[in-house]
Image (cartoon, rainbow, N blue to C red; front, side, top):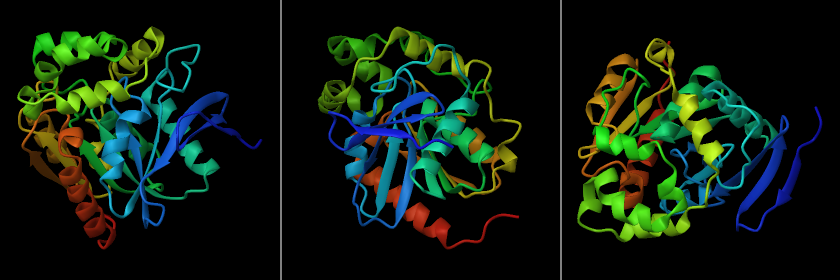
Length: 282
């Protein structure tokens, strides 16, 4: 296997690696003295810059995250892809960084990818946290008007558009205070139309419903109680199919990892510490 092409980028704390012919921009965030690494899969269209406030809230966890191909600093591939392909890229990135095992986190679209990764590489994951996500096409859909706005990347290419639709799109605390959405919009990197389309296509027909019971790592499912995109019932559906899972309901909408990064990080670290002391499910 040829060594990866890795070079520093202009974004502080990030690098670019060429893996299996695909360039990936990644970053290792959080305290360097941390005892664990959390592999974090971001939401659709979101570059790794948007994860920085969330990563900064962790006390004893390093956050490894990367731009999905077509997002931020990772160029779009020539052809559409499936979740399984991105999961393999993540595993190969771990190989290149000499990381044997990680805890896994995924939010929204990235929650599907987190499920896929733990399913495809069960030996690599220790604990799994799913935030504001679902089991795929079996999900109970959110507000149709809100979902229509997700079909376009305009909120990532036009900050003013994000500010105008953010409160109704994401719900929760953003309905009263747009401070977080302003920071989120400022941190975003423009995405290509093709890259966003490929992310949408990767989710078409995807579901974890049939194989969720085969996931044996402990799972924390976190859902907002006012989420217009992924209603709370989807979290209950996930927990009902998993062998070792619990549900945590957050007093917010879809973006509680940004409106309450400290509280979210604390809950995740408590869960991971507890999960590390438990034997794996048979």
